[in-house]
Length: 265
Image 1: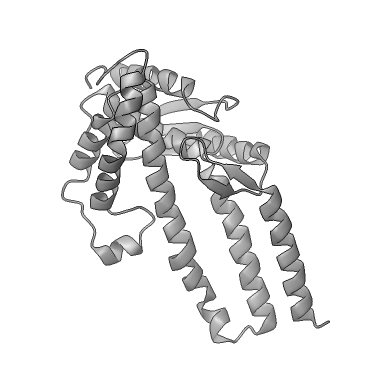
Image 2: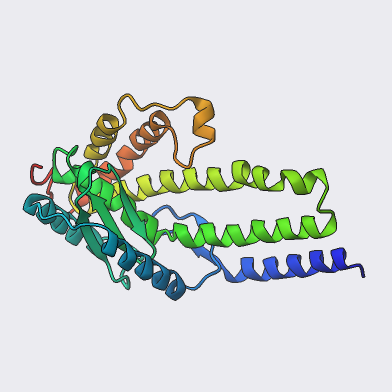
């Protein structure tokens, strides 16, 4: 057996075993996903990265922002299906950056710059629930797994013929047909799960659409730029939220305690 054929056989066998052992159902969305790394490894990476970020950033001393984050985070983690064993940590960083992020294992930061644009706690609850959704959906682990698969495919191609057109085009092809579409899919899924979580926690999910419409006003991407982006276009994302709203409102109507829009920010 030639070296190239041997590599292909080994790769196919390894990927088949990984796929069989790495299937997982995403909470709430019900989608089947492919995971390779154990949760403990993801959590350790997330904690290390979070500790490093906390050394670089300044924690906000805005009492209203801190209270609002504490309030919505407390309610959301109680309904975060699949995150019962997570060591959740939430922090507001004092920065003009209009962003929030989640690290594996449930380490979530919200920048005061994005909170400056919020009208109420429910809008914050959507942003936080979106980040919680990335954690319980294990989007980092899924991305890492598919990254291992595509890296392996590239290695096989280059070992067979490093100068072939297929080898040359492989990396950009993977970027635009696998990596970026997967990233946009993760954002849509986090929006859906986030709206369900905020509704179950008693926040009116209409606030998600209200905030995102206002936050993205005047920032629209072209269709081409949308295909080259890690995030969906604003118009597509808002349309998806509107489509998800009836399901989220049903959850909100069934919630035992209604916070509606919560405290004003």
